[in-house]
Image (cartoon, rainbow, N blue to C red; front, side, top):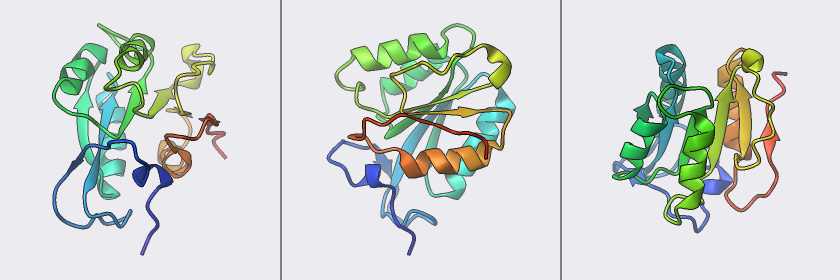
Length: 158
């Protein structure tokens, strides 16, 4: 049976749905992941990847929509783009981290290497790049994120 990621067994309250056993992580309930990206193609790719591994997924196309979802759903992980209309990733992360009920949710940043993003967003647990094997990087990010781990990660694309 596949091992559950270490952050699933932590004391952090993770949002879960469903009753059945997931296909990949071997847990009885599915962790909810909020995916925030203005690119429909990127959202679809990430959502399909996560759903194939047994995660429940909520999607938003910008930070404003994401905050609306967070008013009703408490995900166990947030994956966000940095450059989006209405509210970008940096502003979204600020809103998330200033509220006690969402401050401890792990965040993965998804960005393009050519976007000008400088990878110095210290409030995220991991950074992956849209233009390098996004599924491989997602797999690496999911395997290394732990809520109590202070180490920050960045996928190298290798």
